[in-house]
Image (cartoon, rainbow, N blue to C red; front, side, top):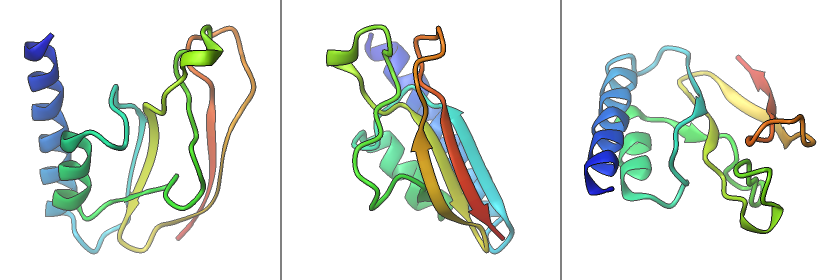
Length: 108
C-alpha cells in the first residue's frame, strides 16, 4: 500500500541520516530492507548515508521470494561506508526460508 511504502522510505531516510552523521567512520548496514536497489528511497538512503551497495558491479543478486524462483527480487542488502569495502558477495542456496542467504567478505 502507499502508506507502507511511505513508512519504509521514511525509515530508509532515517538510516541514511544516521549513517551520514557517522561519515568517515566504518559503517555497515545489512539485512532485509524490503526494497530493490532501483527504488528511489533506497537510492536516496545510499546518497544521504554515503553508503555503497555491496552488490554494485557484481550483477543481479535476487534474494526474495525464494519459494517462487521465477519471481525473485533483490531486497536483502549489504551496504558499507567509510573505510569498509566489500571484496566478495554471494547469494547462497535455498535454506527453507522465503529469503536466500547473502554472504560477503568485508575489508576494513
